[in-house]
Image 1 (tube, rainbow, N blue to C red):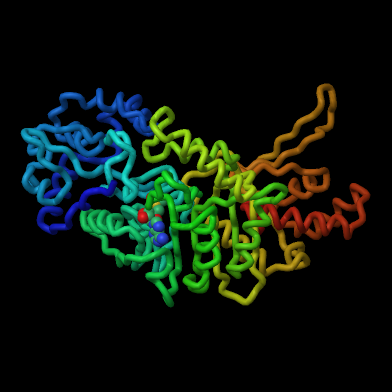
Image 2: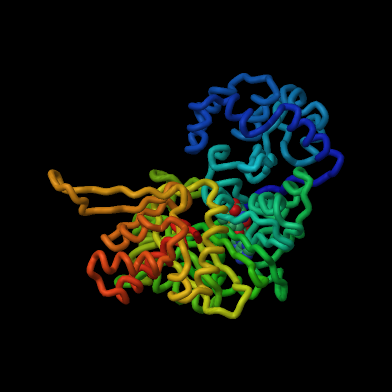
Length: 503
Ligand SMILES: C[S@@+](CC[C@H](N)C(=O)[O-])C[C@H]1O[C@@H](n2cnc3c(N)ncnc32)[C@H](O)[C@@H]1O
């Protein structure tokens, strides 16, 4: 099954639609308020019933727009005319965002308000979601804003840059964010329908993107960018009879080859100082550490790399998650066969675990050895994470240029969001566990030994690390050379994640 045409970009009708949506006002906060906390939270979990009840019988413009474009409910043509007075039903039909059905209209797309933490407000059209359909999604479905879109948007650094690239733009959600801090935005996708939605959303939101059709980086051959973002079609999908190859999640290769190719290949398109921010999954076989696999990809890229693994699943968990995606729910025909296909696929490659995370790559501006930092952080982190990524890259860049002697000859101080936590056995006076905790960023917690704890306690921005460690080694009766080596390692780790700052 394939889908219908994507909405059209008639400039006069889009002007009218924009004014109507603004007048409703069809905004993120307004929709939340109109639905109420309960229904809005339920909708966030893709449970539509409370929201349907909240707008049942609504004739106010906001309620009508939520029902028609957010929930896919058949809407009286008169009510839509009231909600879109400048566009009119005829205009909405001409734009291709609704289809007439007698005295009613039905939306052909999902259209919703969207915004960022900096106060930018947009509207985003994409294909109707699963809950607005009665059948599984067609393979050329164009995804709206999902959890992965939001993760990538949150983790992307937002410094002003001359040229940015969004690979696999879909409806253009990342490109909207890029438009706020890039002088020019190129966005690619293999799917013509995705590019149709991206063109509509760019025109509706009055932003200008260079949209290019083609696979991954092919449309930008020979070009370099200051920032590349990609929420690629990274879902590991069995190439087996009956398993739908959804364009939005399958990049046309087995296993994790899509993410591997992007990680290895994106460096050719990064200007000096350029950053690539990618989402990805990676498989590991028995006895393999994920860092080994990622390490190979990164070595081939020749770039600085900082990868944060956020989640790990076993093949059964992965199969359960992705076999139901697209509307193939447990209990529907073929669901068990889908789960089986995923399990067979992983078994054929001996895969034991599938990791998910955020890959940050960086092209250094100087001829130094690249840094590689591969970490696991599964708990809550700051939101947005972009500022942490920007600060962490800058810190790693500085640290990579310092040898241990240079590092030790500087003063360091603890960041304001850092605290220590001590634990002692019942009845004991001295702590046997000391943990350094970061309040923001990656919310790191680092277990300290006595020497570490002593060093951190005197990092006041005045004493150099060498002075501090020399004194501590005498106090603790540890050879100075050993204390300096251990202290340099600790300072490097803490400074990379922003727990220690230059004094
Ligand atoms: C997970 S969606 C991401 C959409 C959007 N960028 C976001 O963040 O929500 C992946 C996108 O990659 C596109 N895609 C699939 N195969 C591709 C390929 N070979 N080259 C470029 N894009 C591809 C899909 O059409 C889809 O729009």
